[in-house]
Image 1 (cartoon, rainbow, N blue to C red):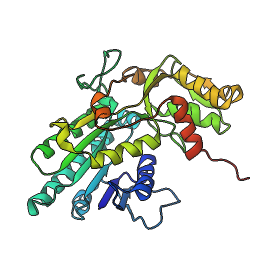
Image 2 (image 1 turned 180 degrees about the vertical axis):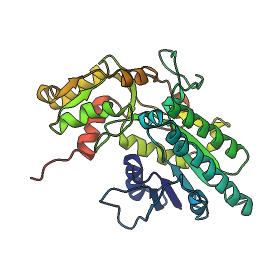
Image 3 (image 1 turned 90 degrees about the vertical axis):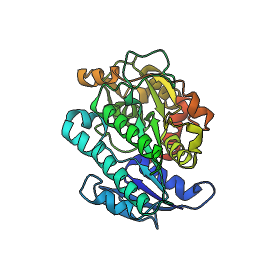
Image 4 (image 1 turned 60 degrees about the vertical axis):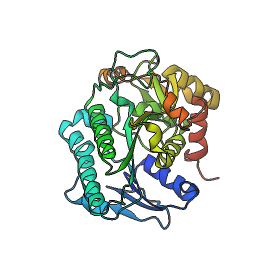
Amino acid sequence: MRALILGGGGMVGQKLAHHLVANGLDGQPVEITLHDIAFPPVSLPNVPQVTGSISDAGVAETLAKTKPDVIFHLASVVSGEAEADFSKGWAVNMHPTWALLEALRAEHEADPSYRPRVVFTSSIAVFGGPYPDKISDEFLCAPQTSYGAQKLICETMITDFSRKGFIDGVSIRLPTICVRPGKPNAAASSFFSGIIREPLNGQEAILPAADSTRHWFASPRSAAGFLAHAATLDTALLHGRRALNLPGISCTVAEQIEALRDVAGNDVVRLIKPQPDPVIEKIVEGWPRDFAPERALALGFKADASFKDIIQIYLDDDLQRPPS
């Protein structure tokens, strides 16, 4: 089985690649190719890395001609950047997906036996308020950011190309992935990881939103598991509804901080410095806070048990400890 990971140089793409190397898919080894604009300095051995932008002319067609069995589409501009740079958000988050789907359709029409599984990483940003206490699988999509609109349009395209039989697609609406290793990025949600990651690394962290802010989380380890599970899912069970709300943990910033206190103590928590940012607060206010993802749970998707477990996963998998 051959898999292509678009956005393979990013954090989730790298977690997925390691997961596939270790576990394969459906008990089969996977031949992986990674594609991204850049890659971390330490790479997986024997895993090809192709450097380039999916938004460049002709790239989608070239990738489609390799006819991978599974395509994991993780490539995108993050939420805060898509909101700040309107043109860039649409140029990266929507147009290349259309180009890729058209290229895959051309490959299918040339060889009708070719119908790849496409797993698209969507987002809970496809929803907009006012929200119920918990968002069910029946709640309407009404994004209130450009990022959310771009993700929803891609979901719709993937559903339609699947309906026509050109691909076999699944869109998974990831919770906010936390705790993200490495440096902060331009996502408006970046602080959710920062207030855990930075203090655990002995650094101050800015908290730009109220500690009453509630959000929906999953660990990087869970994200890799979600993607792998979606790649082998029997899509007939979706009954044409090919976008799924995935399970996660709903908690407030205050509950995040208490979990950090339980794990690492008061001295670590004191490194969190409240500094309200009206721009971030406005974006976060428009995000969903809790879900009842019954369809995904019934289909076998599994998430973390608690936010304390999410912190422990970061400690186990990603904390950069000094050499002993």
